[in-house]
Length: 576
Image 1 (cartoon, rainbow, N blue to C red):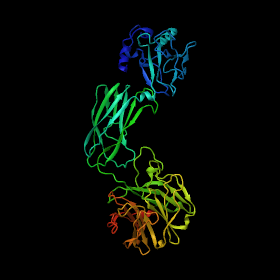
Image 2 (image 1 turned 120 degrees about the horizontal axis):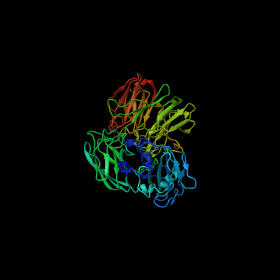
Image 3 (image 1 turned 30 degrees about the vertical axis):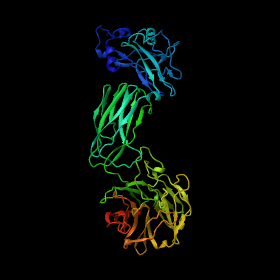
């Protein structure tokens, strides 16, 4: 019975225990709002909850006593039949008084008090009945106790009644199901989707959306929901008409039965493509736990639009040792967004490199520790002053994009250059180049392990690399899918070493790019910063200006003419 119906029933009652309290001392009728009217109604509870069981005050102020009795039966039989609560349940007096000689009968008052009641976590589906009777000041308490113990035997009135708590397990709640019919949304268009709900119980259905796990994310703009259609037995509101907001998009009260709820999704013109999932919650409980709602997630569907390319970024250490990150924007005119702080203390390292260009990871609802989904996103290695090399795995969703460091080993101060190489042998793991002080270049192939050794035993690439004062690699500059390497010699000529995909002879014969590259004191292969699918290079000149060299994918001329990113980059002592 809903609250309005209960109120009507209460208003029609003028007999029983209330009689003593309905007249004022003057003998005239009290104002309607001053008349005490109490009610009880059935409720549904989840295992592991503690429902508050006492009558609801519809009007007036109770200043007497309320008797509450628990039973495993509907309180329609002789007083005491089924008295108590099911095995494992808890009923206790709390601030009430348990009636001596009776089972689970409590006297509470004057107001706001109730006995304690708790449902065990491991209970099966069951029901607990309870009755109440109000005893005004000076009233007959014994009669009130009897009335509460048999409250279901006579129609409820303003001062006595009965109700039950139906306990439904998660398995029972799971009989309420949602089937999703979610076609893709056309680019700049509208599609009709629907939910087919089997409501085994009356309940409350909510619908919202979020990005699907495992896909690249770019803000798609305002995706709208509207055109709501329902059937008899369903009443819905739309707290938010825009997807991915903080509010649910649909909130529906459903009666038992089968329901089809339809709606339309509309994407803005020119938006990015996004993969989405629909999330529903179905709540049948008046008393619930955090996990008691029936939650379902649809298979991913697509709001079609512009393709989303992975975006790369740039890392920068300033002179105080603070490490900052710059995310790529995809715009050639302003390829880097404003910096964000990663952490301090990075001045402890005298060599610092990304094993592959720092790049955006796929979206995941939960935080992602280093795993297969974070591989290749730009792990770091860093050498401290003692010669110890440390490994920083990428992670997603945490405060820092890097997991706590892992020790690779000591003795790395034999090298005068340590540079990330990308995946040179195309085995799915990122590799490291190290040049010793005699000019021999060594390859440390990655193992892909997140718990053991990060690198295999070194492999000699070749001698004579001491002629170069700058190496930069980690990405494909020639469009063949293999990681390449840039090398600047001491005459300021820049050379391209094309990757071969071999773990023993990783580079082909060098190709000359051009002279004059000595004007730069920082050179980074940064990945695709301009959303054209080609890896780009950034270079800082000695006045602190950062320049962008857009990649062409052409071996003979791998870059277009440089464009200025901006000045002031000499606040950093290392870019990578």
